[in-house]
Length: 119
Length: 105
Image (cartoon, rainbow over all chains, first blue to last red; front, side, top):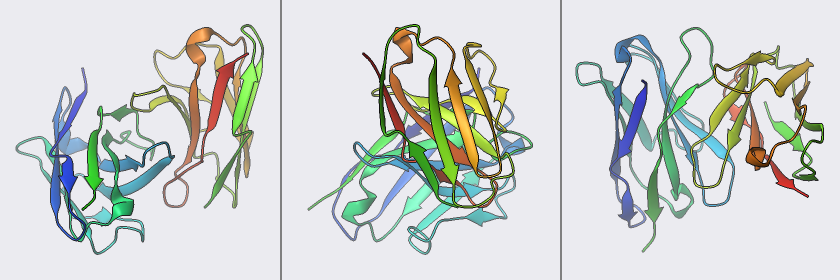
């Protein structure tokens, strides 16, 4: 059974940093692209970052480019999101998601972790 | 690519046939998926590649469309279908629609 478990969320002040982790199990982690998707309170879904199987290619929307860094450790079956220079608008639930093998949709999601950026 | 979902709120009766719309600002080339999100839960994939039903999803859910216009249909609405539904395109970048909240009348 595919399982994705996020951790590392919490309350952080604007301008500070936070690192999220996602522990994956139930599949061969190194074979799949992975992503982070976030959802602000009572809002829609926003793609945050995607990483290739080896970690050599990463993709971001303009809203987080230069502030967020996605990475992975295939030996540990773990995905990470380093978030720097956090802003109030980064307040959201952050989901870790596993992509389909061939196409760009995401069948598997974690339960999410809350990040609150506030002074 | 921007996605516009309509309506934003839909109220229907149990047993009704329900249709949700998703329109792209550009051709999506059928790289369109639908997610269901219940309150307090992670999104669940229902449909991918416009009309392929994800494993384990009831057959009352179906998808159709082409070009810029796509539709999610629930053939007979059930109480457990109360949720917000998001469309998602992966043809050019990755974007989600703003969602349709589905309620029981």
